[in-house]
Length: 349
Image 1 (cartoon, rainbow, N blue to C red):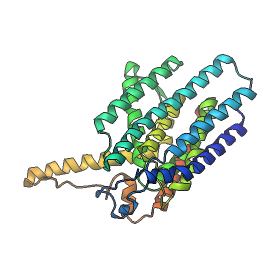
Image 2 (cartoon, rainbow, N blue to C red):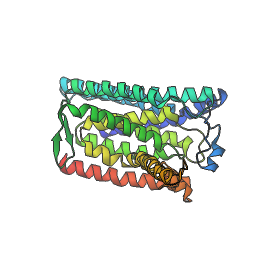
Image 3 (cartoon, rainbow, N blue to C red):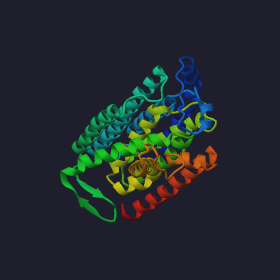
């Protein structure tokens, strides 16, 4: 696929996302779909009370529309691929888009409940897990029928086959990473900025691996997120909500699995993974130390914490970092790991 089409797709996605904000934000304010801020977060986040959520529709619409237009233009003017290859690539592209939409739908249900009930809870953890499990299972089944029948874990330098256990393991990985993207959305502009970088990295990787159609989707999300950042950088005029973050989580996982290179998924998504891991570490350490303290003194709820607050971006906030500095720092880390992934793909892909 000509590079000019990808550039056009990203620019179109940016424009659609940015312009959509002019209509979407006033509408969300009108119907009172605002964020409820819990007391457990940083105290200064209370100023964000009532900021419209579901702003993720900006880049969802932008990425889907621009991808559809870009792929249509590609099929009309480019005739240098076999029909069977073109069909397989198109089906992978559609599968990634549908998977992302379904994850976004789970997030939308969560946001809707929050907005209607004016609580910051939404769907229960059990409900989310069931829906995510079903969607992830369906996506793996689609990839299987499209030809990805390998049960190998591909770490680039070496591979090992885990047989039928590959599928339940990958479902757990998909759920973990998609929710990790969701957790990254806790500071103005953070999730959007990091996702711009990760999706540009995946765009390049997919081009190297000849996954041209999927690379178009990846760069459209990067462009859409840039358009969304017009409204989401500090001080944010809207939040992407779970609608947006779950869509991005689904898109990241889908594009990553198409490459069937699991090391790349970890490297490119390292910021997301560390965000979620910080929560796991914090909760686990607190429970262990609370249990030890209870055995010694009989007092409950007296555990210790490693971080001042989790996810780890809140730890940096509590240490005095501004939201802009956190966005820049995390984006630079994503840029470093994304660049390393591209270099490794060139060398070993």
